[in-house]
Image (tube, rainbow, N blue to C red; front, side, top):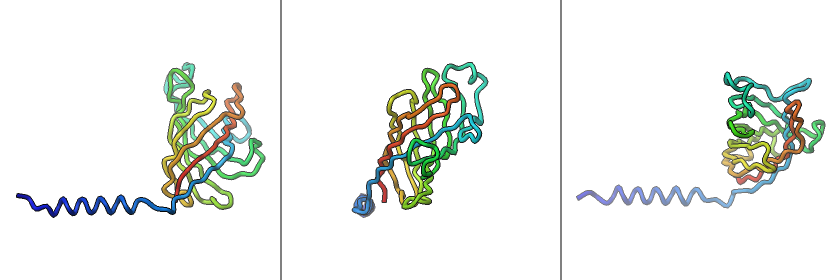
Length: 174
């Protein structure tokens, strides 16, 4: 008969992991800012870097991959206070609607959160009134972040593709 010691050790180890993963140091933060996606203009912040052979004939630009370094500002005015940048990419990932797969890091440059980041990865159906995407991590003040963002288009120019998106970010972190 096998010794009960390995099972006892496993249960003790598991209990220790569970009890140490719960902490009263967790904080909840709500951030509100505007994301400026500038496709056409004197200083574009979003650039198509790859596409499928059929992207330009697709009604949704399916297959395009866009790299971004979009300013995050305090208000909808691009000249308002800069609080950070959305850096990463989005892919036009739906053949039926304007649906983006977004992989981006919000890199903050202002005050309390200077040098900290939040990572967002998820689907963005850009013509829905409000879109929810998960926050899957962070660094600095947002270490171990988890939460969600709510994105709402504030302004969109169909001719240029330039957009201003209002973001409400809700995260728990250490």
